[in-house]
Length: 247
Image (cartoon, rainbow, N blue to C red; front, side, top):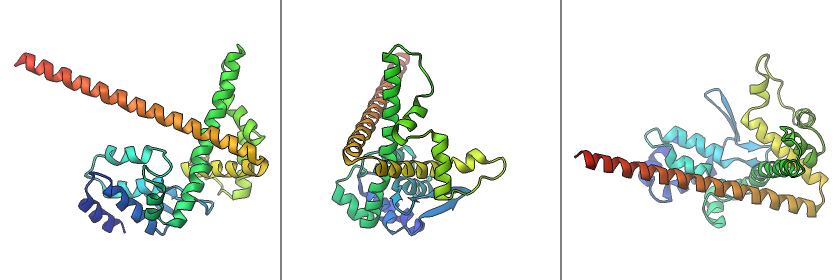
């Protein structure tokens, strides 16, 4: 499949949108829910429900695009938009119905949940500052208690018991227990916990809050990229002027 993808990407080139469809169509056929690549565990499907298509796309493109500047495709993968910049129907046709539904579970259960956590942490920090209280690094811990009713450490211990996370190797606790995959699985578990404990109105309100925070972060990233691009253009113009002056 990877060999076929390499040849298809060469034919598609990295101009326009066709190469993205080639990647998504490969993802639709990909049979593995988890994989170990170079000693790194990649969990594409969390809990049998939430599919991280970007993680798989990054793995495939990293394998196939040695001769292509990573910025060409990394910008696409780093954009958290719901359907990868395509219309909903286009994205669903490309990845297939099952992976499409699993993608929605990941988007709302991991991406939006992380944004909701950031939004609540921001609110707690803002309230402390507004009340004239000293800044504290405990805002994130309070956010866990606000959303899920316990501290992060307490929640993590319950998560390990319920999801049966393997015991960490001696001397490898942080790496084994807190890998990217386990953190995403933990976030998805927290999402489902919140769904069980909240009434529909609260769930809807929190979802809107998470989506709003995600869009604000996205717009901030867009503005940052525009500023960087403008700075690069200015430096290029100044360089050309210096060269002209020297000539």
